[in-house]
View 1 (cartoon, rainbow, N blue to C red):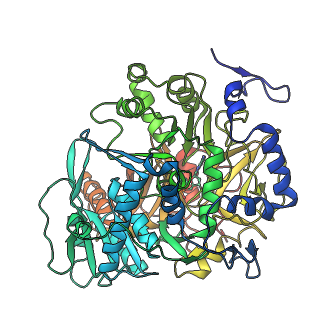
View 2 (view 1 turned 135 degrees about the horizontal axis):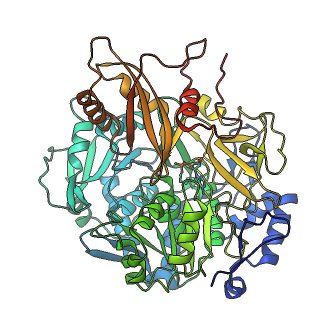
View 3 (view 1 turned 135 degrees about the vertical axis):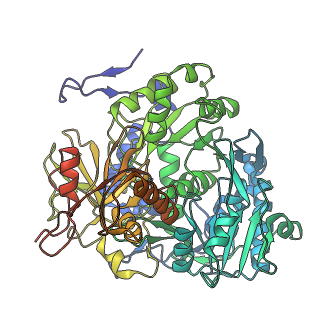
Length: 639
Ligand code: WT7
């Protein structure tokens, strides 16, 4: 039976789903408390976040909650000292969590490993010591280029424990993309694996790192640590490359935790912007842990008995906040799966849910759309009764995908928590709680302490029902502290709309104040929930010997949400044939990696341009899709 009803104020077709009474009674945050939190964050937002900070352990308390004297460079909890890893591991060792499962990992071939908090703590300490032995010090950057393995988590936490800054690069990026990120961060060490299992195949990984470091490329790298996962043969360079297991075997089980200033960097996460160069988003120890801890525990209503599975790869921010840091801060059990959701068949995810008794399942719409196609016979075979909450992130979820998930996975009982946030925001920003009324396709309302709004270009709130720019009016604790070596580009986030943070989405708010995300307003393509910049793809095309110039836009794709379509002008004399298309596809994969999914390539004599010579992607987009997102697409100047 579906529990839905129609609110008087809404149109007939807008369904509202109510949570089960039991869920409301047992929720960490009940409706009265949510109301109180919203009111408090209106008149005393800093007090709200200060209380959130008090739930964690600090080596030294803050002098003030927020220093906003150098806007837009905000500093949360100035004067405070802490380390996020202390809060993820060390403090749990002193409590009943010590022998609780921290991490369940399942490999694609079906092998699995489990770590209690105590075991994970010791493994992290050993690897922290190993990194120190390799000469990695506080402030040094460590690139983690890994598949989803327990050691990926260990590497991140070990780096953070000694005050180094990790930068996880998704294993779907090419050697060139990896090299660019290593160089930009001037990384001292790279941590990788020999290979991994994906879709029934063994993929080699260390080879890609070797290629990234070939010759004098990325000569900042002094050492490489290799986790043995597949036993494929790899070349080890003497004095530079070390096996993970050889290193940790020699190290002690305890390691001192570096005392960090709250604003000191924890990690870099590169993400696509509107230029050819990815941006290194910087997150810190203090504010990040406060924001992530508060939002994850309230939004997912984390209970001591939960098993939390976010299907994201640790190579994205979702993997940082919702696979590693958030769940461990919350003292829950996090689950990691190495492989493909369809391997060996389309019920793999449901098999994992049933096997470990997952209670909170958080995924991306693209996975849902893919699994919907295979039908419910795959879901029916498994006992999914352990599930309590479902979650979605990364791109708008259509009402069809939402209701499919709700009915077939959630037995029409588990709320679908659609969370809006970004690499830059670090934490969930707009999202329901389990007690909220839900409308399929809406991310509902800003969380307490988050001042989100839908505005016009001048920053005025737009009327209900109208499209506008999604902005955040006030700073929040887990916000990025900056862009790596790029103050100017950081400022841009605060310059597009006066007095607000704007990171590129268009949205609409309805009569009930519910927010509906419509997509990006800039030239960032959302492919299966991953950001790929048009400009990055265009630069990659431009590097091909037969290409004069190219324009790349996002076009709708039934599974991936969006896919990239390229319009290419070829060098005179070059053949516009299938051979060239194949070669271009190979070239793009080589330049950027499999993340940059190209749907099609079309040859053009010329591209539409502004008088100043800028390519007008939105003209191509309008031609292609017959629509424009809202009336605010293209923040670029057309003069
Ligand atoms: C962009 C951020 C941190 C989440 C993973 C992606 C889109 C994110 C939603 C949602 C509609 C969403 C936005 C945003 N997005 N969540 N629930 N509904 N769109 O992080 O790579 O930094 O991408 O993803 O367009 O700007 P990201």
